[in-house]
Image: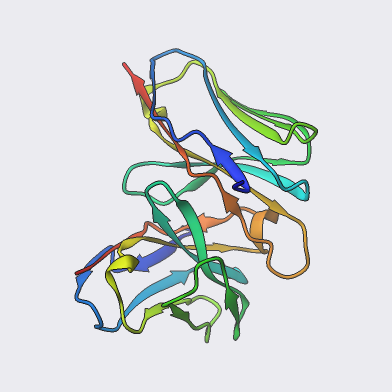
Length: 114
Length: 113
């Protein structure tokens, strides 16, 4: 089954404690991205990757890092989380960038930073 | 002005009603137009995809794009309780490199049995 898998689904952490949210896709997609979804603000792109070792900033990259060492994995790293990073996070993948092909989304990670 | 404007609702309709969801946009370079459906506690999933202007029909769903007015619509006929979800419009321009999807904020729809 084609899918994008995120872990964990739910996470509560304290300010400043480094965390990683993992994302893995089994469709051999080149393009992957991370979004955060906030009430009243919708989905906003954090980072994207067009292929292995190729990553770049989206609209709201501050406070986040990513890496793309393998095609299937695209982890999101919060080096020093802050309460304003409390949000619902989605990883997505597609065979090509943006809207030219269907984007498949993971189930989401609800992060709370206290 | 936001690139993509979408009325957040919430919208509540009786079962069997025709539902009209809309988005307006400002970027004339947008060529790819999509509607995603997001159920509670789930990730968005692609519902309809349209390239450039025109209509596209898939079962009870019809997507319309009017590029001259920078306006897109999703119609749901004979709405069902299972259609209750948040509907997100999304669009992108064709440029080299990253062609990010730009999302509307989503409209929450409830279909009451």
